[in-house]
Image (cartoon, rainbow, N blue to C red):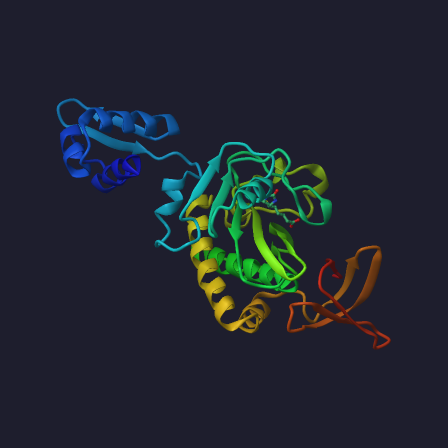
Length: 324
Ligand code: BTN
């Protein structure tokens, strides 16, 4: 914690040097301890200069998803109160599942600068290059039965759409169930995984991948036509830590609302962002493909589709292809 206090004081002082003596008095540790914390911060990538006779000042903050950087944007809620940061992981969802098995509490966040086996929905992968995207997983422990889990994932998508609007002013769309699109291309996806019994959820892992500052030519050829980043749309880079902060804040509000009032308000919010309802679509679920018009969501968040013979089907999971 003290390392974070040193950082907070340096941040607050801006370009004004602050002496080792003042830091040690304010935080209540020895000057040697202050010096050690400064070295540790430097090792994490903070550029801290020492002005002879005057003290330390913060020159540059690294563009990394470090806990102290994210936590600046949080207001002390449950989500993100503990953050585990990795430079590289196979998958943040896999790591979060391990932590959930170890019994960590709800709200623990795992973030990575890159993933070498990022997982997408339906057994696919998720392109996770270093430093330009957000790869995060949150652990939830809701007192819900497993059939409520799909509805929960809609909540994750709504929160992200709202957070993007807040940070960038960009209005994005949600393709059922929880793909986030802008200019007809996908910039973020959500993978929810669950551990539990037939009648009780032990933990839910909400994994989110966001193409934030990825350049178009850096996407693998096979997804270049369908993938986009926020930077490409806006023509400027977006702060990843600010976006994570906004996401966790909105998500916590919506999660509380969900626990209090159920899925209804979440479904209402989801519909405000949806780009699926009203469209003629193909839903692929398992080995089946069904073509029809997406007409509504039911109370569980399943997609209701009606074909041109009037047959109505509902899907709790699946992949939607929008017909142009
Ligand atoms: C999708 O297919 O749309 C879902 C993509 C989810 C990717 C994220 S990245 C962070 C988290 N860890 C993973 O391995 N996958 C999710």
